[in-house]
Image (cartoon, rainbow, N blue to C red; front, side, top):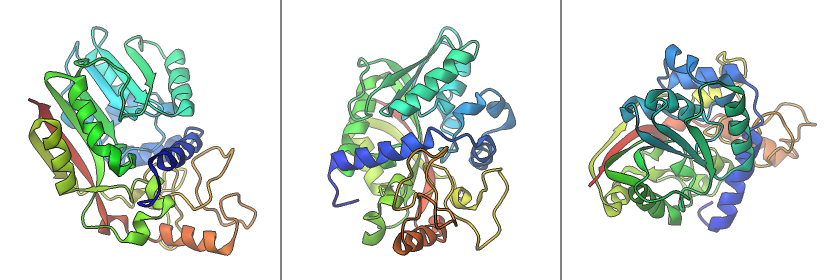
Length: 310
């Protein structure tokens, strides 16, 4: 995707997430969340329908949210993290989710409408490079496996937007995928790897520069050493796949196949059937198989990022 223009990248990402918004696999989402450190108590405080298995970490573990604060989640999806955050900031606080995808916003608002004690939650449509909120709104900004999906030219803008949005002394608590080394060009150009949160990953030095240039201080970036192959190794029922039989899972971070499915109940993943909408020819099938056999940990890692607005 390195050669693709910005609008095409946003289109492909949005298309992938529209498919992901239709997922109904609660057990898959639970297995992925637990692998990234979410506790049983935390998961019990999150509406099950909001957990689509799209996380690559737990930003709330480092956010230190307090009663009465305003927290903003960039790329909030179906509301997984922002619903949990809402219980931490309480009725006197505000929990605001920002997402560009209409299908994700529709799912999030539907969940909110059917759950009690969510009056402090709201969802706003917008891209995170142009957040439609007033400056100085947030005490804390969280984000989970989203910034890597932003086109490279827009990434510096995202960090400047976060800085603008925060109150003085405010903080960011982010979980994201970072590249451990320069990624091979064929991987960077692979749409499946891009919408799967891999090909767009920045290196650590780039992330530090984005934060510094935006005006952040006290920057802490740490590799969580989490196993990113959980996306590929987990079945829809939450069980672990047998080696040699796995295909990409239904996560943002599980690389999608080359040909996106339309109208499926989950984000698109390659299937064995020749009649699958996900496998239209032998080259697509071969690509899906190659993706499924990729050791993601060799190229990228799950990092936690914390910084304070000067």
